[in-house]
Image (cartoon, rainbow, N blue to C red; front, side, top):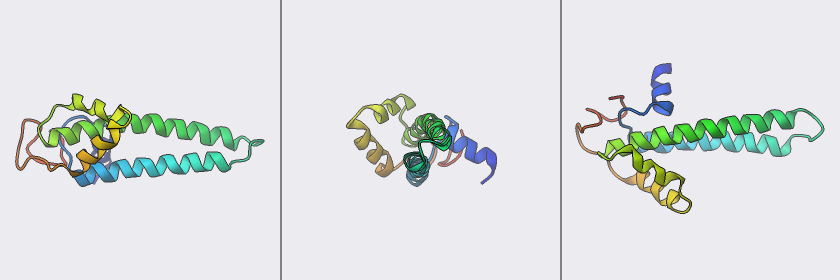
Length: 122
């Protein structure tokens, strides 16, 4: 998997991705955010490290929001649904159910209008 493949996976909106790719990409963002938040909370207040970890956390947060939308759109494309339904990932309480559904709902077998195969751009 090359650099362009990773850029497409995390930030592209075309094509389809599988349940496993969606789950693992979301898990990776959660680990990055948790690490930055942890480092922010244990950094000494007097030093500049607190500000650096806070900025890193917020940068990761905004990148992960964009990436979550892109991942959700591609996951929805995998079973033939339009990407606008990704908004459900940002509604409190509904987001948990939507995430679980996207992790477990099987995609379309074969080609659909969003791509000929899973885990590839259209």
